[in-house]
Structures are given as structure tokens and as C-alpha cells.
Length: 507
Image (cartoon, rainbow, N blue to C red):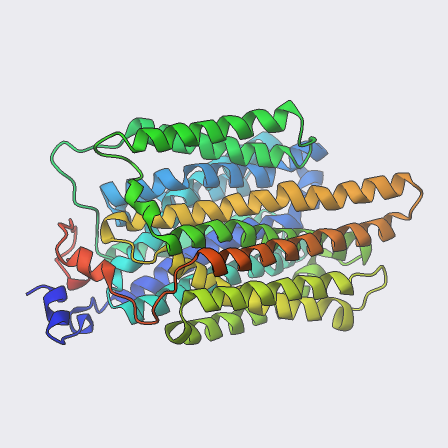
């Protein structure tokens, strides 16, 4: 008797659940924590890296851009590969690639070696991230448990982003910047050892001879890479320049071609049915705006603390401790409330509260601001409400996704986060920096211009979040607090390959 039949007779999938599922979640979230931490851990160390490896100012940006560009461009391909060839297998491959490239980055003898290692690191995330998130709906087939698991996943991702600044500052000041990469290795080794022990293999059912839609894979990957590259170029060049517009329009053209192609082929890489769920599509769309604000706040606050207030890297890292605590509290509140309220109300509360937090943070910026009255209020309010939304975004992005498309759905969601980060770095950060340059040229003191420019960017970021709130209100369907367990229904009858003995969680 299938799990779906048992549910129809009043039974519960919990009785058949894989007893290793929570241990598996711990391994998956540990790796996701590391992946998200790696996005922010580098920022504080950039001045030291510039000095040690003789980067030019323009070249230094590629320490961050190389990672974001590759990860954002290949996430959808990584998600589809995990669905087709096994989520555990692709996750292990991604962890291995990420771990080896981390060693290369830490041992970099010159700028080219470091940037090359960051490109490969981004590809490792593109494989491991979607595969890990795609495993959660398979492991947690009970709707209530899955909501909790996805809440933990989303919250830990947010904590990882915040902790990265603390870890980066501590290692850069107390040890050496190279250890921001070497610390990834023990986590990767732990994951490689534990994954075969606690995670069953799962993949989508495939017809004989079914393979990868090469045209769809190349067009969607090329389109995302081009768009992310164009957004990153906008940080240095005017929006009307050829260096910005050519990759942006080229990327959009490739994605339009991909949509037409996918609607005509019998075995598409991205089935059009994926975009018929309004909650899922809206969650992915507003993720772009939410992550644009998040990346902007973290980036500009780091610059403000070091360049305006004169904080050391270590002190800058410690400044983010209240932010991390607020994120932990917000994650717990969100996980507790989501089964009662649903995704839509949680997201609206999160976005409005986060917008208020950014406005509070902008109002606290001053050339002589104190930490307690100027910096910490914004950190606490924004950190809390931002964390409330992360688990809801993850749940919304995987709403009613079938086991067949779990990796694809997670790839889309993570890709939208990367595109959102790129959008923030390419729009809000240049807005602030150009304000600074223009006012310094007019005779303003640099520190005053920086403070005002950074505050302006945060206020615009708050506007992004208000727009996200309106989109959720108008476009997102109301998600029942006890949704139909589409994943359990889909996976109960799916043909799922296993490298370990069959378990109900992946049957």
C-alpha cells in the first residue's frame, strides 16, 4: 500500500518516514550554511587580498563576481542534472568540486589563480545547492514536517550569510585571509563522509533513452550567465553602454528562445507546467527584490563601518553579531507561524518589516554614529524581519512541486537569489557610489558624501521591498496552512532509483 493510500485511509506518512531524515537535514543545512557564508565571508577580506595578490581595483571585483556569475548561470542546469542523474550523486559531485576549488583559492599565488578558483567554486555551488534543496521534499513527505524542514533550511541560509561577515573579519585580523577558504574543507569532508550514510539516492523517472535537452540547457544557462554578467558590468559602466546592454539583451533573447523551444520539444529541460503555479512563480520573482536589498545592505554597511567610522575588519565582523542573533530569532518565529498563517501573510509581514528596518538603518547613518543608537537598531529590525521571510520564500518556491521537478524548482529559486544579489550590486551600490563621486566633486567631504549616498541606496532598497509586498498581495494565491501533499502524492508512485536499500521517504 502506498503512502498516499494510507493518507486516504486516515493514516500518516510519518509512520513510513525515513528515520535518517533529520540527520540528513543536518548534513544538507551544514553544507548550505557554508555555501551561503562563502558569499559574504570574502567581502571583509578584499582589502587584504588586494594588497597580497596585487589586484587592480577593477580586477578585485572579480573575486566576488566570478563566484556570483558562475553560480547564478549554472544553477538551473545543476538542478535539472540532479533530477535526472540522482540528487545525492550530483550533490556529492558539487561538494567535491567546491572543496577542491576552496583549497585552490586559499593557496592562490596570484590574482589569476584566485579568480579561476572562484569560478570553479561557483560551479560547485550550482551543482550542490539545487541538489541539496531538491532532496528535502523527497525526505520530508509529510506536509507539516516539510514546512518545518524548509524553514530551517531557509533560516540557516540567512544565518550563513550573516555569519560570513563575522568569520571573515575574525580570520582576516587574527589569522590570514586564506583561511576564509580553507575553513570550507572540513565541512566538505564531513558532508562527503556523511551523505552516503544518511541520504538515499533519488531521481526523476525517465523513459528509456531520455536524455538532457541540450538546446534548452545551453540557452537557459547562457541566458542567465549573460544577464548576470550584464548586471555586474553595470556596477562599473553606465547603463546605456554597450558593455551593459549587449549582454543584458542577449541574455533576454536567449531566455525568450528557450521558452519557445521548451514549449515545442517533447522532453523539455524546464516543463512549462512549472510556471503554472502562481505562488511558486511569485515567490521566485520577489526573491530577486528581497535579495537585492539584502546584498546591498550587507555590502554598503561593511564599507560604511570601515571607511566612514574607521572600524577594523575584526570590529566590523563583530558588529554583525546582533544581526545574526536577530536572524536566528526571526527564523524560529517564521517556522512556528508558517503552519498557522501560510506563506502569503508571512511574506507580506516580512517585506514590510524589512523595509522599515532599512529605513531605520538609513536614518541611523552619520559620520559620528554610535553603534548602540545608530547601527544596532537597523541591524536588529532588518535582520529579524528578513529572516521571517526566508523560510516562506523557500516554501513558496517549492509549493506543490512534484518529486519529479524538485531539483529544478530548487535551482530556479537559488538562481533567482543570485540574480537578486547581482541586481542589488549592479543598481543600488552604483547609485550610492555615483552619489558619492558627484558630491565629492562638488566639494563635499568624502565621509559626508559616503554617509548620504549609502543612506539613499538603503531607502531605495526599502522601496524594492514595498514593491515586493504589493506583488505578493496581488499575485500570490493564498496557501492553505495544511496544503495538499503534492510531493508525497507524486513520489509515492514515482520510480525512484536508490543506491541504498529502499526507504519509504524516497519510494
